[in-house]
Image 1 (spheres, protein in one colour):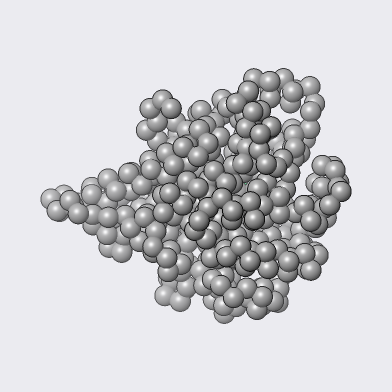
Image 2 (cartoon, rainbow, N blue to C red):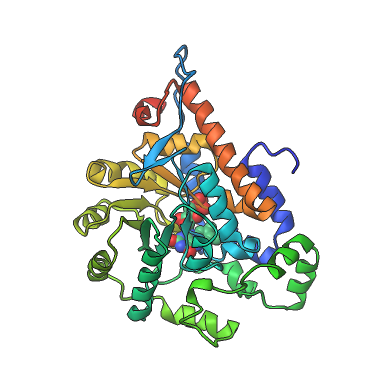
Length: 377
Ligand SMILES: Cc1cc2nc3c(=O)[nH]c(=O)nc-3n(C[C@H](O)[C@H](O)[C@H](O)COP(=O)(O)O)c2cc1C
C-alpha cells in the first residue's frame, strides 16, 4: 500500500478502483445535494481554539460508547451495499472495527448477512434496522440480531421514503450490477474489484434472502421499493422497544422535539444525523443541529453524531458541541474500496491520529475534557 496520510487519499484511490455506479451511489446526496454540502461546509466553518503550554504527553483518545470501552470516539456507520464497494465488504469492515476497538454497525441493506458477520468476528456488533411493511419479517430480523448477540439495535427513523439520488436512477443502479455496455466497459477497467466480487460469499442483499426467496434482481429492487414502510410512527418504536431487550439507538434525529420523544420512547442513544445528506434535501447540516439537541436531552440519553466527518478535527468539533461519539460513513468506505480491510484500518488510524494531535494542540488530555472551550468564538 502506498503512503496514505489522510482519508482524502483513500477517496482518490477508491474512485479509481470501484466501478462508477457504486462510487456515484456512495458520494451522492439527495436532489440538489444542498444538505450534503452543508454537512462539510458547516463543520469546516467551526474554528478550533489553540491552547499552548499544557502537558499533553499522556493524553488518550479512549472513551466509552453505549457503556462499552472504545479506543476512540468513533463507530462505523451502517452502509447499504457495503459489500458492493469490495467483495465481503461488511466482514472486512467489521474485522477492521474489531481490531481498532470500535463498534461496527451492520445495515439491514448489507450484502453479507447478520450471520455471515457474526461468524467472522468475535465481538458483538450493532445491527441497523429499516422497518418494512411485513412486520413478521421485521420481528424475525430483530430475533436474528438478538440470536447473533448484536450489542445494539440502531433503528433508522429518517427513511420511510427514499430521497432521490439522481445518478442512481441515471446509472440504473442494481444489485448485482446490471450488465449494460457502459457498465461492462467500466467494470473491465476494475479487475481487482471484479475478482473480489466474484470470490465473495454473496452478491445480493444477505439479510433479505429469506423474504425475497426466488426473486431475481429486478423483483428484488421492486420488492425493496414497495417494502419500506411509510406508515412507520412512534407506536412502532414502542413495539420495537418491547421486542428488543438491549440498547436501542434512534438514528436520524435533527430536531429537539423529536429528540425528546426518542427519550420518552426509551431510546438509550440517538444519532444526530441527516443520513449523510441523502434524505431531506434542504435540511440543516447535522453539526448545526447538534448543540440544541445536546442541550435539550444530552443528560438523559447518549448523543452520537454523523454527517461529514472526514478528519480527527471534525470529531473534535462534534465532541465539543455535545456528541459522545461520531459515526463515520463515507470515510471508511473510501478505505474499503481502496484497500479492503487494511484501508478501513487506515481510515480509522488517520482520524484517530488527527484527533490525538488536535487534542494536544487544543490542550486536552482526555475525551471527557473536550467541551466548548476548544472552540474559537
Ligand atoms: C452509500 C451510503 C449508504 C448508506 N446506507 C445506510 C443504511 O443502509 N442505513 C442507514 O441507517 N444509514 C445509511 N447511510 C447513512 C450513514 O449511516 C451515515 O448516516 C452517513 O453516511 C454519515 O455521513 P458521512 O458519510 O458523511 O460520514 C448510508 C450512507 C451512505 C453514504
